[in-house]
Length: 382
Picture: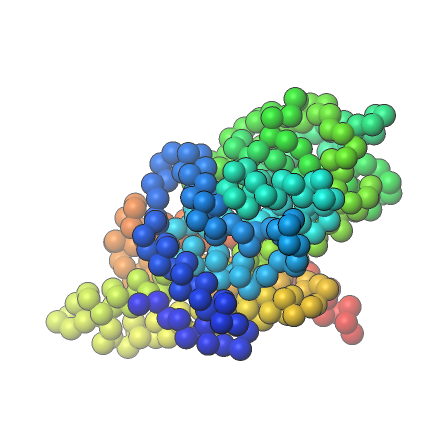
């Protein structure tokens, strides 16, 4: 039985505890799914999550607008990740993909949110480029004003839901100023003329990813989110909300690895006694439990801080993502070791967790980037 004692921490309200219970029951009945046809699986998961109401927290309700509840996002990602990495991915990308529209979109643009919250449209967040990567300010993709339109040209890569999304939030250089101040954000429909799938990208944990090409893609000026030159600020604001949730997904993976390891230690016999009686195994379990609880504290501190009115949680979110993803990698590595040969057998749960966790230390700001962010926040405060 997974540890639920953390739900009694003062970070949470009764509605969060009830959500965790209901979602865990839903996951036990509906997950995991078959990942072999990853596009079809992801589409089906989005539809099922939307049908049963689990996508509602990913974006504001245009009929009843209010702030996103980051604790709900984190609890949902942690719970889904513990059951199925692709289900977590499907949920997370609906939020990240529409985050800019939720935070900065016009009422007309926010009409998309009714579809994404219901699982009737798949969204994507397109920021990374082949030559800029983490250095967002040096992006090369351009958006040139042409009368009542903008014309987008360039490439985006490592785009989650690339190739299956119904809408993309795209960041491109509009040139109001050098560097980060000359970037703007746009909504581009998935069927826009000139938008192509240059390459489907296969990674160690099957997810729908692609490199996108934009060959003079024309969108109306009404597709601009916010003001010209606001794109970098918009992107960072979105990441400020969703970065903590990446840590929550890592926490879900780590909790599952810990649970599997405790069961393994209790059931497996070595030298005539259960593995759990070996002090070295007890030491590994203790380290894993410590890392899980420490990560949870950082994640839910960041989420609670944002939910209680903080304008920005850059430092808290960066700490949560960095610690949780790095420590989850260590927890899962210990789980593989404790499972011996079974731990590297294809299809075993800890083998799949080992593949799932690695990307989380890269996307939405790699671990090394988070260290830079944290250091600048600390030194800036001084």
